[in-house]
Length: 140
Image (tube, rainbow, N blue to C red; front, side):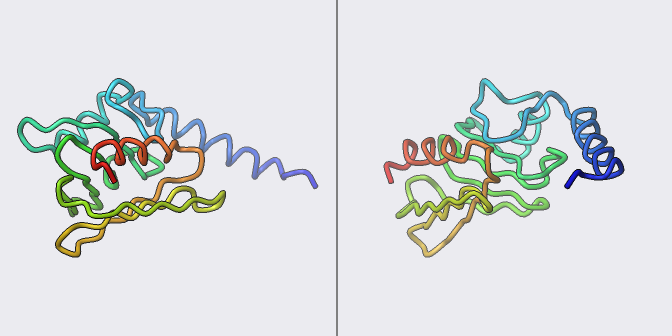
């Protein structure tokens, strides 16, 4: 069965729109040398003085920074609509990872005080990179 021309046009339009609205970010998990100016700006809004990014992921389709996850040199951070959830790296007690082709990578981070933080990284967005950086940063 062939997709309808309307469906094809809609898909092409969405791709063109996302490319036109972007600031050079390719999306997916990025390490510092891959981050666009917009990504650096979104991260800077959350970083503490002297803190640096090790891995960055913008979960939004528009890459607008309203839902991001980061591993920094000090903590694991999740931001959703300006709500910041964080666990200091020294307090991470466990990292549990699952992955499948539909939901992508799901990374649950547990903190010493009972905190939990979940990062969901869409398929084909380099979730394994985020997980590796998190393991390196925490030793977990």
